[in-house]
Image (cartoon, rainbow, N blue to C red; front, side):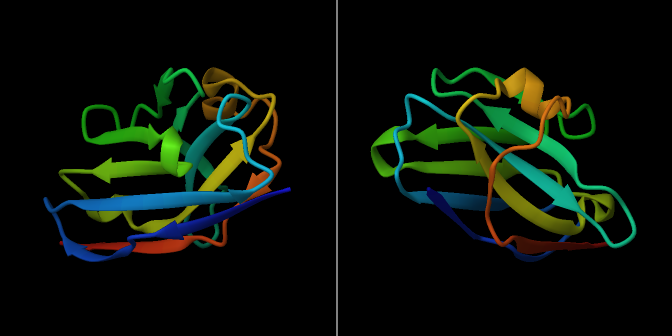
Amino acid sequence: QVHLEEYGGGAVQSGGSLRLSCAASGSTDSRYYCMGWFRQTPGKEREAVATIGFDGDTSYADSVKGRFTISQDNAKNTVYLQMNSLKPEDTAMYYCAADFYLTPFQMIHGLGPPKYWGQGTQVTVSS
């Protein structure tokens, strides 16, 4: 089992920045899983934002390329999402996810749901 907990959500004005953190605990081995960030707004499907593999390979949704950066600290079993130049349309509940078999490409393109999910952290961007 893998337990994921997100930190760092909040409210920010358009153009501002936030950094989300996701700490993994439980039966973890960073060599074996891919992690990612997803977001969801009421009435819409959850969408993948950014993913990262154990080897550091990353994938991003087109809507966040050049603004968001996913990174990881394997020693701390933590994944980060640095969000810059935030826009009101980035407002959503952000979820951390992990899976032992999906690649970053598969996870970002929805080719299989991640097995493990965090509870989510709210990000609100005002104009």
